[in-house]
Image (cartoon, rainbow, N blue to C red; front, top):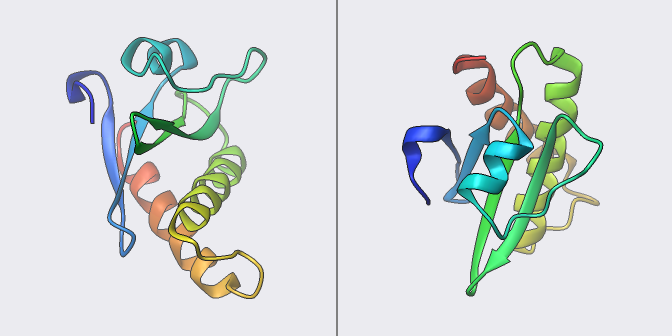
Length: 111
């Protein structure tokens, strides 16, 4: 992972994945120049490959409604499952537990 002074890192067990959590897409672009970004979004979850390594990040600005945080945590869970080769279809319990695990860490940190 890049310089951790500017963002938090949460973990997605049992997939052994680290997720960078940043406050803005501007911060995401600064820390991870190869990450995908969205011009009109203020929050999001992204996955990308850089030099053969998979990277995961979430943009969760201060004051984001809990419903939107949940929405982005579902995207993060889907990306992690996709990367691990676990299809979302038929694995709703895995997806639900993973989403809960990610969201708990996001909510437990500074917001």
